[in-house]
Length: 424
Image 1: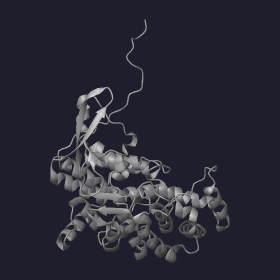
Image 2 (image 1 turned 180 degrees about the vertical axis):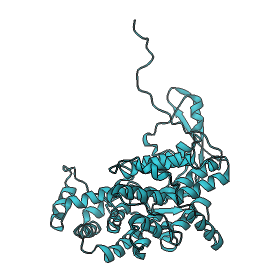
Image 3 (image 1 turned 135 degrees about the vertical axis):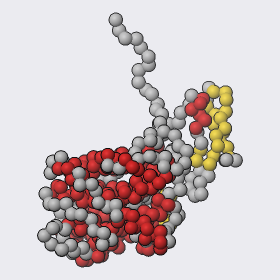
Image 4 (image 1 turned 45 degrees about the vertical axis):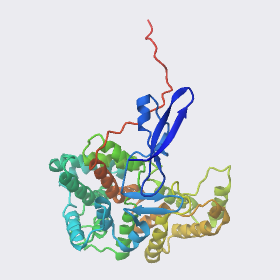
C-alpha cells in the first residue's frame, strides 16, 4: 500500500481528492487516479504518454539516460553475452536459465518450429503480390484453429505451451511469407541448426542445393532479433495486452500486435531508412540532402537519426553498429548505398548540428542496412521486427494473465452533439 498521497482540488468542487502515489523499483512515481471515475471525473491523456496502464516486471527504459533493461539486465550485456533464445527465456521466466533449463527450452522451441501442412494452403490463397505483413497477420491468427489443446488462458501450462509454439513458429511463417512472394518452394526448419541459422536456411536455401549459412549473418540475425525482443509498453505491446484483457486466445493477441506494428509510425522505420538511402543514391549528393535536412522550410527528414524515447543515445544502436561493420566488411563493401550510409553516419557523429540536437544514428538506421546486406527485401523488414518482438509480446500477455486483471476500457472526452430529438 502507498503511504504517500497527492491532494487534488478542482475549481467548483468543494471536495478534495486524496490520491495514492506509488513507487516502482526504479523510474518515475505513479499517481493512482482510479478513484476519480467514481466521482464522475476522468483524466485526459491522448496517446497515453503520461499514463501507466499496468504493473510490469519485464522491461525498464530510461530514455534520458539511454538505459534499456530486460529483467534488470542491460541490453548491451545481453547482446554481448546472451543469445536470442536465452533472452526469450529470460523475458518469459524472469531469470536466466541454468544449463539444463536452457537446453530444455531450446529443445522445446526446436521441436515446435514446423507448422501444419494445411498452413501451406493458407498461403496459396494469398496473391504473390500480397504484403508479407498481411500474410503474417492472417496466418498467425489462424494458428488458433490448429491448437485447441492450448487455448485455455486460465491454465499456466497452456499459456507456456502457446508461448513456446508462437516463438518457435514465427521464423517459419516469416520465411514462408518471403518464399510465397518469390514463388520458391517452402523450406522446412532444420533441427540440427541453431535458431537463426535455421531461419536463414528457410529464407535463402532451395531444394536444389545443400544449405550454407554464413556464421556472420547468423550472428547478425540473432542480434537483430535479440535487440528487438521487447521495448516496454509500446503501441504493439499495449495492443497485445488490450486484446488479451478481453480473454482472446494468444494467437489472436499476437496477430493484433502484428497489426499494430505494421503501422509506419511503429514498425516501418528501418524501411524508411532504405528508402532514404535510395533517394540520396550516391555519395556526391549527400551534402545537398544534409542541407535540406537542416533547412526548417524543407519537409525532407533524415530517417534513422534520433529516437522518440531515447533522448541522448539508443543503447541498442551501439551494439548494432558493431554488427553492421562486421556484415558490411564481409558482404557489402562495394554497395554504393552502404557507402552513402557510412558517410551519413560519420556526418551525424561529427557535425555540430546533429550533435546539439542529439540526432545520432539509431537502431533502425543500422538494422535496415544489415537486413539489406543479408538479402532481405524491405517489404519483409517489419516481418523480421515482428519475429524478434514476439517473445516480448507473449511475455507481457502471460504476465497480465498471471495476475488479477481487468478488461481494458479507455475513456474519452466527448465533444459531439448533446441529446436531441429525432425530427418529425
